[in-house]
Length: 373
Image (cartoon, rainbow, N blue to C red; front, side):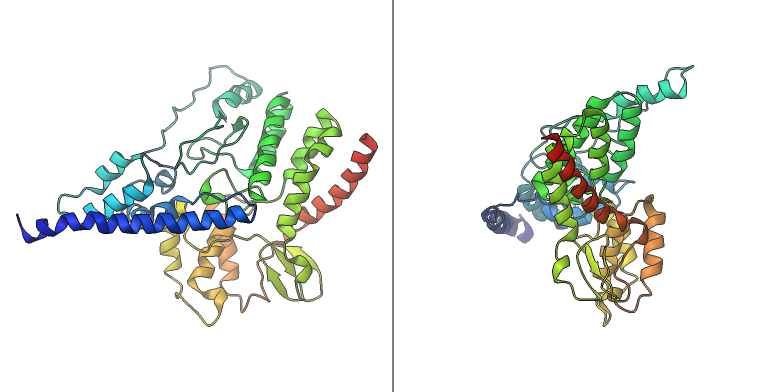
């Protein structure tokens, strides 16, 4: 036995102490949130797995960074992490084998092949059941968030439901006569507002820190065209709660200042902006964000040009109602040259009517609800 082997058993108790310490901190945090009467948000995989998550993403084990973000730990992540710390410096350690042993990777869905000779409408109608998912219950450490009703996903690597995209999905469902699915999706988004105070970007733990364009009022309006004005009364509490999420802190803003999603311009006008509560690399694009952020200093006299600020902008850039990298690139190329937060508080002009429109619509709905009894 070598001296290294003789020392190795001591690593396990040390790792366990770290794991237990982390668990106690997590429990204290959960208890504090429970005392506030709020639902404790489950941690995203980068928080849950710490250095293991960073190392897996840095090693490029998967062509798509989202793959490991969506992987499900087969046992307590704290124990997996402790085991990883004990094994990773061994000469025979194989990171890929360790991941395959300790995680269930997301399954690749079979490519859908439509029957020949279909019309476009028939093709679309045939896709609805293929893209419908049901996750009333999920695995304990899954990054996927459960939803009470079935929902329609974009497909491919996007195995979850997305907020603003779903409004346009619902227009298609309505056109196809699937009003039951429209009802289900509205109910799901209402359940998310009840649980988290807002509708996250998607039903993943790593999307909880941000939302997307607030289209819930449009969804409810769509459903009301079929089910009647009673729908407005049913979902009024959730509509008001989401509005408060977007306008939080607005009343206390001085001209030229911002707080999360609310912005008071120099002339006193109140607008909204996209915001992410986190300024860390996105778990689903972790390595890309790390590489991009390295182009900026870790700290800067101008906080808008610091590395954390860039990471936040990478996050909020993907809230925009545009697709993928082009949206983020366009957003950051404009804002990286900003002299300060007060001069450029990330206010996207195209979407600013949404929360305000939701507020106006809410006033009209209160009248409709009173008339409906």
